[in-house]
Length: 428
Picture 1 (tube, one colour):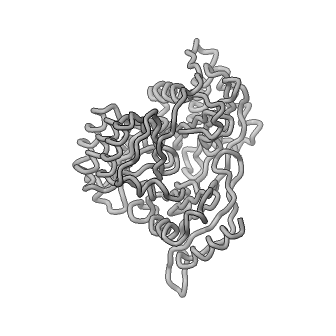
Picture 2: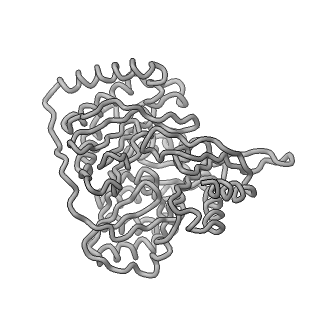
């Protein structure tokens, strides 16, 4: 049974804390999902997740929770019917490729979605893709501001005004985060695929397969040192680039489009019934749906239509990102959703305006707490001799757009959390 469960990870399936249930993750390249696909996911949630909310992740994926083992195949068949992929959504593989949904550099924004999709399709067939030392993450930003969080990825591509890429690489978070470094400047689009292939092969050959806590791409860099790491990677890249002709993928300017609505899902969750309402609204608005990397949905189109009442509860929420945490995750130490609700119910939108708050249920940092304006990382500490949930509090992160990590400022028990946050917010 254990072997079967381990193999399921490559199909995007993890066992939950309650071991009779499983989570199914599906890859949505760049967060771009069609309305029929969105409807199908909502339908599957009602049928197989007992109506539990769809969960939007920080890598623009969708997760379905509380699925019984005997229903996993039915769920995956339903997803494949509408062209949704789960292979490599979890496990030691190339994870979902993310794309900035709406860059803040609005005067000049390149459409990097086609090249992201091109890369994801071509990497899918690599033999090494599904036998890596650990996971490998790639992100694209459509403008020079790096809205796609390149510094927390194994490879982050930033489109520049000359239609060439700046490449940031070998960054990751986890319990001991270390952000990426610049690998290349002015990389032509035709070189993106051979660079990705070279980096993955380099990772497969040099990654640590004995110690999973030191097995990410950036751990090779830390072991070698920056200069040797870049030189070694470049040797792989040059050899790969010379091995055959490579197809190009042009970078057009994004077409004129209007953001009709941003919906911020509390803790990344939207009920299946509300998901169906959203699909109807998107169709009526002739809009496209995009999943962003901060528990939100963005609708773009040409026709403005007022959102239905069922969706208004998602239109004015603070930007709080929370991983599923203790209730479902086997590694969760803290109830992240309870902490997020505590903040939403007691701090005003005015207080939280312009701030990103990221809450991780354990030191694995899945909610990207170490790059947030305010980050909380769950832990367990003793109070009066009894174990209690607590949070490590960090401030001042660069949100993955630069190499600035949030700094540890406090460690508090849950009942002290609001007092600590109020103090931090007042000091800003």
